[in-house]
Image 1 (spheres, rainbow, N blue to C red):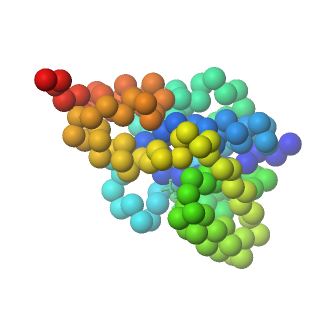
Image 2: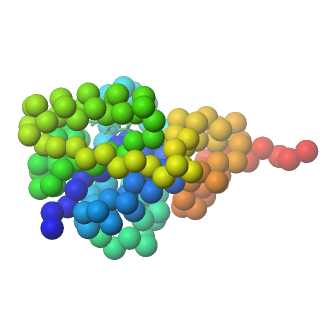
Amino acid sequence: MSAVLYPGSFDPFHLGHLDVVEQATILFGEVIIGVMHNPEKSFATFSVEQRIAMIKESVRHLRSVSVQEFAGLAVDAAISAQALCIVKGLRTMSDFEVEQQMAQTNFTVSGVRTVYVPCSPALGFISSRFIREIAHYGGDTSAMVPNAVANVLQATYPPRSKK
Ligand code: PNS
């Protein structure tokens, strides 16, 4: 069976992402997590190397998952990785609208298809943006990220002292 590509900026990788990866391994077998640049997010909090290291540690229990950096277009990454399709996670209707436009554009320009994986209901509220924001102010994000990511967040942003 071919691998599938799960592209994203993963800044940082969280439990919702991990859920999509785990579901994709059940559905497709091999999953390549593609760490990419999102042109709409000009500055990443973590370097590509940091993000890859955190993700590798977070998916250590999944034998059929690999992590790679890709530059450029997601469809070119999928073609160069010989991926069967792109996989994306869906949390909300607003995710669907954005993802549907990207999926249709990607298919039109390359023939690469996108398959959506609905996230588990208990994890649908999690977003990298709010994790970054809460961590920045010393808040506790450990319920939303794998341990490997929690450790890096705590080292980067010391927790606020409790009164
Ligand atoms: O985790 P994100 O930030 O939602 O991931 C978005 C990402 C990186 C998958 C998207 O920005 C992307 O595909 N970037 C590569 C550039 C590209 O292919 N653009 C064409 C979009 S139709």
